[in-house]
Length: 428
Image 1 (cartoon, one colour):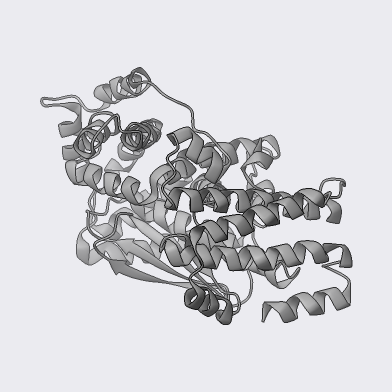
Image 2 (cartoon, helix red, strand yellow):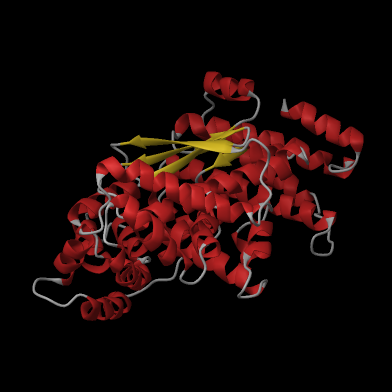
């Protein structure tokens, strides 16, 4: 029981001090509010491994949304009266101050999510600021057209650029009967590279399931006890470049490592119960998605990813390894289109595009196939402004880590961020 963990830590006096007691009370109330809101919103509680009776109580009580929001506002008022300590970087005082900030912004986001579920309408930027503590830049079509012009030179021939791009990528589809072997090899390599730099809790593990009928490409369901279940959606063909993407993003050093380190360092070692629950529509998600995406670059710096794909994954997939370098070059060029979903979502959610027009925008400027574009619109319907966490999150995490590390070794600053209570405002 987490309450026992907190009590033992308080008695020991080494990791949690008596001065944290008011925050401990607020943290427990926060967890119960997240679970209460999750009764109204099936996507809200992304992970929970605290006392099971807390979840059972929330489900039985089914508190009204206005009451949940009122309690969140009362907790915010209590936090405002608690002056967080000041201290040097890496000190206990700094960590407690970060905890105070974490609880403040997570509760603010919870209050806003309750309002949205009650019918409140916000602009795209207002919603993303309130939920994720960040606003993505607005990029005009001209920005994406410059990227598309560069890709025109890489893919000469007849037909539209989208037609040529789609046809080119078809040659890099992993056959369905080889998907599992390719993913297993990618996961093993991502884990090997991560373990060189990050000490993971003993017994950490995850299992992989292959599913269909989802709006997302893959998902990490963290179960607690240092274990995750990773689901990979097979609705659309799996390209060879998705293997490393998903193995890193969902596993090592991405979501699985992030959640395991938070459980070890903050929940178990410090008794910070608020980290036993993960509220999806909250600032924590920008850190989670940003570190998961940037972690691919950290694990495979420079040309190391292309070399691993060429030497290992292409053969397992039965593809021509001689095409690996060009395919990687085109993939990197196309990554400059990662903000296209933000613009499609912004216009769609604000009513300036309907679903068909949003899909067409994704096809034209994001080079998505018709099926990919439709799936992405379904994702936007379900998760709304969450789309900013992937691209803006990655950019903010990259800038934060690179300011604090050398070009030859990003790991120290990166793994410090993985195990900290830092939120988006702390990245700037």
